[in-house]
Amino acid sequence: MSPKADVVLQNGPIWCGRDDGVAEAIAIWQGRVLAVGRQSEIASLIGPATRIIDLDGRLATPGLNDSHLHLVALGLMMDWVDATPAAAPTLDALLSGIRERASKSRPGEWILARGYDQTKLDVGRHPHRTELDAAAPDNPVMLLRTCGHVSICNSRALELAGIDESSAEPPGGFIEQRNGSLTGLLAENARGPVWAAIPPSTEDSLVAAIERGGRYLLSFGITSCMDAAVGQRAGFAEIKAYHRAKQEGRLPVRTWLTLLGDPDRTIVPQCYEAGLISGTGDDMLMIGAVKYFLDGSAGGRTAWMSKPYLGDDQTTGVKILRDDELNELVMDAHSKGYQLACHAIGDAAIEQLITAYEKALAALPDPNRRHRIEHSGFSTPAQHQRMLKAGIYPCPQQVFIYDFGDAYISVLGEERALGSYPFRTWFDLGLKPATGSDAPVCDPNPFPNFYSMLTRKTWKGTVMDARERVTIEYALQAYTEFGAFSQKLENTKGRLIVGQLADIAVFSRNLLAATPEDILDKTYCDLTIRGGAIVYDRLGVT
Image 1 (cartoon, rainbow, N blue to C red):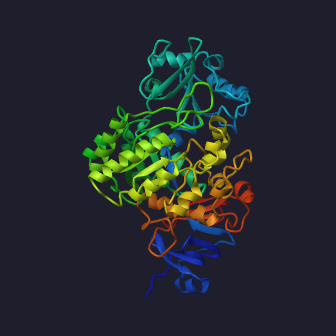
Image 2: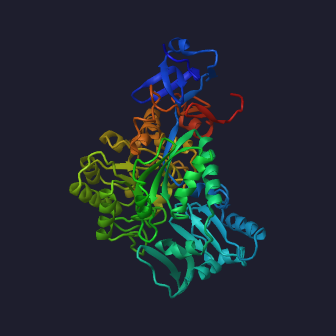
Image 3: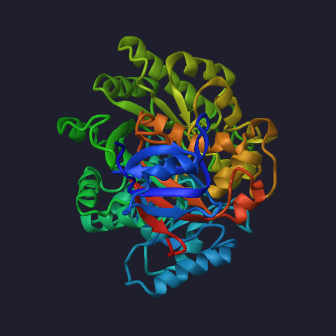
């Protein structure tokens, strides 16, 4: 005799997966999917204690999986000055936000701001050190570009970091000067001394950030995520904070932890010594992969390209690690049993990473290790074939097309920019691309991401190679099943089939029949269910 369901969702389309079709009703028991099918078939599983949720025509899907974001950073930066284009479209507005925060801060207290994009500012350039000095003369200021790879610092911040005109650029870093004077712009590894000068986050603040960021994700129907650089803010203490958050019931989303492995900042030795290797943990909190940064961002002109960016400086971006150094790091993590998920955006960085993965897999074969290339924005057809052969998978953020596509054109030209993040190509090749937001680089709101996948349009309306468009079914598969696949958890979550976790998002309209424009501007997540329990209810009536 079948058990009676704890929860039944009915009276609306239930998208179970791209290969699983649409059902009329779904029954949940003990946090997992008990049955899916016609409403008449599920009726026998309804008992006196069953909670019935009327979809009223709304679409239910598997809970979304943001396969690459920074949960700790997202939660922490929600308290920073908001310098995103939406909040600060002009330089004056950006500086006003910093000035206002300074008026409420003690002298000497750090002011941190995030999210500007010089290509979207009215002045069309990066802010300058002296402008930040004027806005906050008594406080050190660090302004983080939207990509997270470039910072603008004022004079007080540079002084505390020990950076002046005589400072040598570190390997994999850039300190900008003009006419023999610092502009305040620091890129990649050059920012390390500034981060070191900022007071570290306490364990309490880390746990609060995990909870704050996770609840924000639930409001979008996101039930799972990958934290893409655990240890970046507070080292090994972030591992402790995650476990404390889970123990205290303050971990809102299922989280797959990617361990920062960069030299001088790595937490991998401590994790390995503690037995924390890929797959350790449970459905709520699991050790995922090891991450190394190979380059920066295309919009910031620090992604490592094989050919120069537009402009007179002939820069090809920033190569962070030597070839022999990366090969050794990848081999070490691979031999310890870790999956790898390394940051590589430019085609030269992708080439370097594929080569390192190939060497490790040749020495210690593992056809199901699923090493990942995070972002993989400017991969080439030849690289795709090598990825297929080696079992290497791209893990992109298609919302980059929407948010940054025009910036790519401005720094690379149309020929190289339009075909970036070739989503449909990856699908057709069988490379199973996931998707995500890289929050706080982009907002985790999934609707611009869906819009980008469906239209390949930027926020300005520029079409970035229409051949790479996909249908909503493909887009949903990337956000659900392929997100789970990228974490080697496709048998646990990502589809609404019997036995899988009952993680469900209910949207305010039927995405399967909606226009891309309605998805972008007129759709909300109404209800989020994790493990059969309602964890977010926008309308508060369910």
